[in-house]
Image (tube, rainbow, N blue to C red; front, top):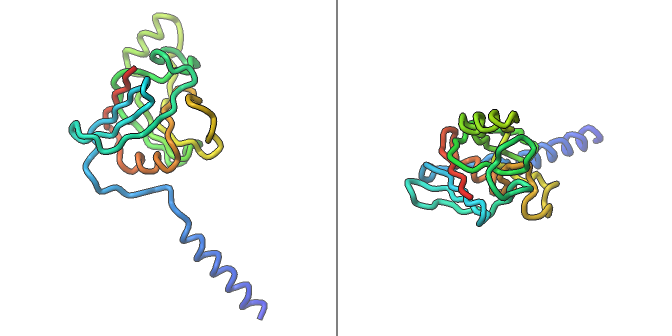
Amino acid sequence: MRFLRVFMMLALAATLAGCAPSKFRTYDGPEVTQVLVYKSARVMFLTHNGQVLKKYKIALGGNPLGPKQFEGDGKTPEGIYFIDRRNPNSAYHLSLGISYPNENDRVFASTKGLNPGGDIFIHGRAGANRGRGRDWTAGCIAVKDREIEEIYSMVREGTPIIILP
């Protein structure tokens, strides 16, 4: 009897584990051909050949005015970059890497004798960062966890991202 009870509990646990929602979604819509970010409006658009597919409210670096220039300045970059990597194990739920710094960013920082920084991502909040205020990242672009799940499924490596003031 005890064996049957243990077996049933394990079977129930396995069934419930299989029902847990996955953070990985599928997307079969139009290709995202560009990501557009308007920092001053705190908004990001995913587009297909100029047509808006999705719009998201965003949080930015803790010092959002002006472009990122140096490591630790708390700013979000401005300019043309590319999605260059995917992180399914991000500390911020899921994340998509942005190709900052580009060559111009590196040259500018080097003329000042400083490091341009790096590790700029579009990422989620990972629960613990909910309610942290309007701009709380170290220079990244943050959205809600359920939104980064959607974005992660839609945006591919190589997609251009244009970040405007």
